[in-house]
Length: 462
Image (cartoon, rainbow, N blue to C red; front, side, top):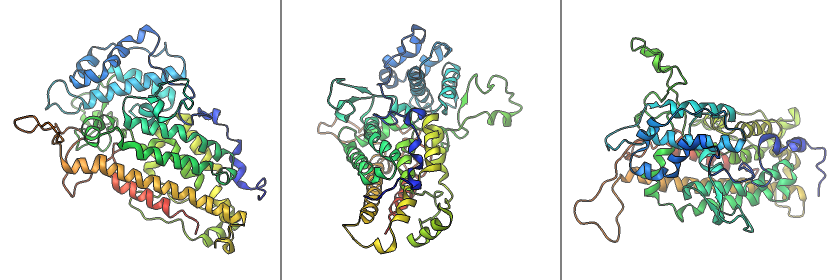
């Protein structure tokens, strides 16, 4: 086995997961299960709504309940788990308020978020280093419970519970990715021992299980709208964003100065898979570069890359995909710093390019450097396969539903009389064949995903 002790690829091994609030066993998930309730009785007004949250949504009663809710201080919260619980439940209530209804099917999205949510939510978000909007951390990282704490694999998807199978698949992927994060920190040995590849393989298998217990119709027309944010959402009823009462001096504006009022609207992207730090960490570790959406970029030839490395010791980074970089603002502060520090020091791809000379690009099974190149390419191929599956899921769960329209799915026991119709609202709406179907983050979903997939595929070292 080659000696890599002096290579630049080991520079980042000094990063310590605990410095970034990352669990050695659960990765970007907490080491211990998230809280199911805030213990202090002071926060019962929040928890009582959450006790029957789904029922309140179905009855269109979230808005009147939130309007009656008192403005609570966050001073009685002290632990990270308590802040995470508060952020999550306030986020669920906020999005149910903005996108929900008050008993009237025709009532649209709310451009106003009451102080009972906005004031404590913004305060908690500041402490966690996050934007006050629903995000991957809230619905996946901090929204699970083990069903059997004595199970052999407590984080197996069959032993996890959450509010939706759709969220649960992402949570399980994050848990299985912990091995890959540790392998990345072990330097180039992580690629050699196949730990990164094994994590990616497990993630791909879990993603393919999305179809088991999540109906596309239910997800698109009943769940997805509550994941949307308030950026690029003019078509969904939020042309300016959302006003946070009591935070942005919403009580002092004058109708004579409407431009001042418009500047106080907040625009945030909604919950998106692009906000998971796991996939971005794998991209960084493998040196997969993503360009601005709509711009074509390639990794360039292997020979040219080697020549640059021989001269400067590092490849010139391309313009980054601004959407992926912005999505880091929706991650917990520690996770965002981890990605930044990893990107500043990780050089696995550079090391593989320099180690595998042109003569070794042909198959030479007995040469360890050729094995290294094959291991690297296997990881890239698994990332591409994962993104292929993601595109298929988005096509089935979002694109097909948007094209088909909101008619209720047929059943084996149809109800006599006119067919019932689902109410198109917010992000859950029908588009024609030429229309753009936006993701919850506000992007053209398929264009973005296909470009990311193609950039991944072009990263192979041929």
